[in-house]
Image 1 (spheres, rainbow, N blue to C red):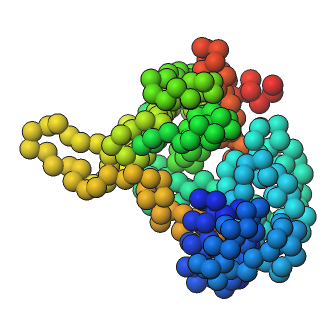
Image 2: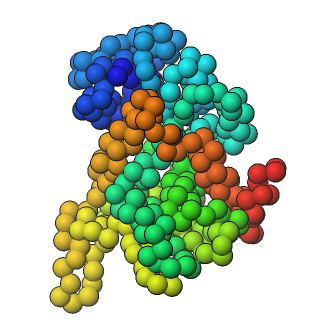
Length: 334
């Protein structure tokens, strides 16, 4: 099949490399406002370069991958749907939840699949965790712990436009908690602090946060996030039930060191970047998209899924600012 890529920044170029290695993909068509980025992709992957999204949609592509800036996501999703072309779009659907809801309304009733990029759904550990929960191996759940710790903050300009740590970083934890447990979040309480880069505080954001999520069956989920984790990129989940407990990310590249005598685990080189930690997950995610394009599977992460994670992020943001518990219904109705 022939796949178009809109946006060739860090993640777009990474997707181009991944797609070029998939058996189902015969050719790539790319476009980016920065001509040098498009030219580099053409040289590396033998891609065809066009000068606009309109030209790309008219280039006979079977599916499109939207990796452009967040502000461009709504228009590009809608353009793909109007052209009848399956869409893969990196999260978020839109910069604000109100815009995301408008996108959802605009595509409802259209018979064009849309997949939103939440790569943890394709990581083997998280896939196995979900299967264990669904299979009843853990019994009834009582506690979930989900962690995302970045080795260092992104640039100040990125932070200023990110929408905040809950919308930019924690949202991955929120999505994977919903996906693994099969439950919805009903209420949150969030806290945060700034003990690192001044530019994060100046942007009105926190560099380290914690959130308590209450799920609709009474399970408690604890989410921990930070922009500062000197040992590496740390993504983990613990799931505790009345019959058993399991962990995702408990492997030799875990960015922790034990101070227990005689313990050598973890013994590997710590993960230091999200692309390192989730290389295979990204490949599986885009392989799934080729199956969506081929019509052999439904979207594994819909706009509705992405918006649910977004409501949790909005609730946590409000909770942090107002120092109080916030229900999901409160932000949904705001």
